[in-house]
Every structure is written in C-alpha cells, then in structure tokens.
Image (cartoon, rainbow, N blue to C red; front, top):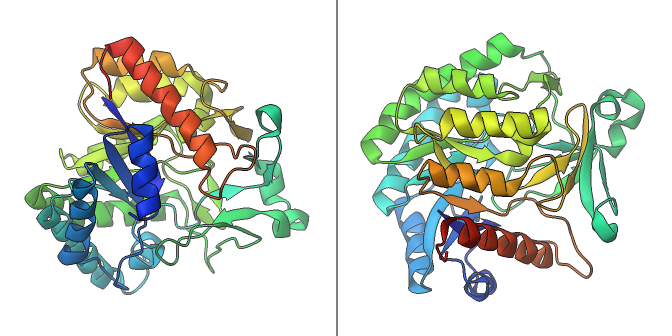
Amino acid sequence: MRVALGQVPGLTDEYITYAQQLGVPSIHLNTPALPGTRRWEVADLLALRHRAEAAGLRLEAIENVPNDFYMDVMLGRPGRDEQIEDFQATIRNFGAAGIPLFGYHFFPAQVWRTSEGPDGRGGAIVTGYDHAMALDPARQADLLVSRREKAQDDPFVRGAKYETDRVLDDDVMWANYEYFIRAVIPVAEEAGVRLCLHPDDPPVPTLGGIARLFRSVDALRRARAIASSSAWALDLCLGTVSEMGGEAAVLDAIETFGPSGDIAYLHMRDVKGTVPAFHECFIGEGNYDPAEVVRRLHRMDFDGFLIDDHVPRMLDDTPYCHRGRAHAVGYLQGLIRAITGDAN
C-alpha cells in the first residue's frame, strides 16, 4: 500500500518536482492534455509513462478521458458504437503503453456542488452540496458544475449544468452501462488493463434529467456482477461513498470489494454530513476514520495506492491546492507508516 500524488493534470517539471519533494513513489493523472479528439494513441501514452519513469516515479493510472470521447455512449445516442470502438482502441493503447489502470465514470451530468467558500477548518475554502438548492429553479445560476469537455479543462463552472432533452431514468442508464461494459471488458482483459469505475458524485437519484446509477454500495455490487471480470475494478472514491451513508457505507464498501481484489485504488477524502446535504473537509475530520480504513486494507493485504483527491484550499494556496494536498499526502504517508510499518 502506498500514496501517489493524485489528480495531476500533466507531467510538467513543476508537478514532477512537487511529487519528488513530497517523497511519493508514484503519480496519478487526471485527463491529461493529449492529442486526439476521439481516442488516445500509444505514442502519447507511452511518452507520459517514460516521462514519469525518467523522474523516478511510477505512472499508476490515468483517470478520465474527455467526456466527448464517450458522451454518446453514456446517453445512449446514435454514434455510440463508433465511440465504443474508439474507447476500445484507447484501452488497447493503455495496455501497449504499459499503463495498467484506466479510471472512468458514468455520470454525464458531472459533479455538482451548490457552494464554495470559507466553510472549512480555519476558513479553508471547501465545496458543499445541498440537494434542495440543486433542484430549486430560482437557484440554478448558482450551481457549480465540473466540466470535462476538453482535456485538462475541468473547472467548476457556475450555472453550467448539463441537461438532456429527454429523461434518462435508472432503467435506461443501466441499459446504457451494460451495453458499454460488455463491449469494453473483453478488450480490457486482452490488453491487461483494469477499468476502474468511480461512483457518482453527488450520489443522488437524478440530476439534469439523468439518473445517477452508482449512488450506493449495492449499485456498485450490481455493476461488478454485470461485468463479471477481473478487468472490472473500482476507483473507490471514499468521499463519494461517505456522502452516501457516512462511515457505515465506507466500511461496507471496503469489506465488500477489498477481499476480492476489486479495489484498484482509493480517493482518500471525506465530507461532513451525507446526502441530501454535505460539505467537504480536511481528511480526518469527516464522517469516517481514515486510520480504520487503512487498518482494514492492511489486513486484506491491499497492494494498491491511495491518492489525496479533493482537498481544502488553504491560505495563499494555488488552484491545484499544493498546500492542501501536501497536508493530505503527509497525513496518508504517516498513517501507512504507523499502521503497516512500511515507508511509502
């Protein structure tokens, strides 16, 4: 078990130096800016891996392609078969480039928040979500919605929610997911790549007229059963699972998916409160005990990695939240050393 620097948008000198200074052995990329409007190619993926290794770092995983790569797939629109072919090609290219983990989500309406302000410890900037506000027609201009139409373009955009012209309920979205996963899992098996599913954030029934499937631990169990493959795995975002049902949900997920090896890696963040209302916080002051999570993972001989994920923005912090991330990374490194005895 080890800590990787998480949510890195690209392997610039700055991010590499930052990772080296933190003493982490590896790095996790999110939607890096690579060429291509439909798929990513082997040469570009291989260049990322070689760049990391030249700096003494392991490239653990890449999480998320631009939404445009598979929006027709998620929404079940014409063109999805062509997008699936490109997604399959990207999976093969991950394998050829020696990148074993491909993180993805299946919530086209993206991450929603209803507040961002100095509500964290000591006035740190954190985001929050209130479902009643999200559904209030008079408050729609205040919504904060993450967008990932283009590589490395994932800000929270105020009022920029995504809506469809027809309601996509649970049955429709489950059918869309099953169509997708049954098409890509055999390719992942052949390529030696694990597809790592991120649960829906926030985990509420529907937003923008689109059902949010992966809003409970039971829904994640169902997804695993549909795929029925060792190439299916979880990018287990504990912050999102904590939003579902606090510590009970977090420990349920760990005990359900940990022993079978279905957790590829974890996003170690937390919130205070659960749906319908919560706000993000520093690790260690939220709904669950991070030490108990690490203890249980250690007992299961978990050999994956943990990342810092969303963090509060501290005093004089950067948009990437270098200060907040340094706190989270150091916290996780200390936990692993204290509980397992291993430096990481």
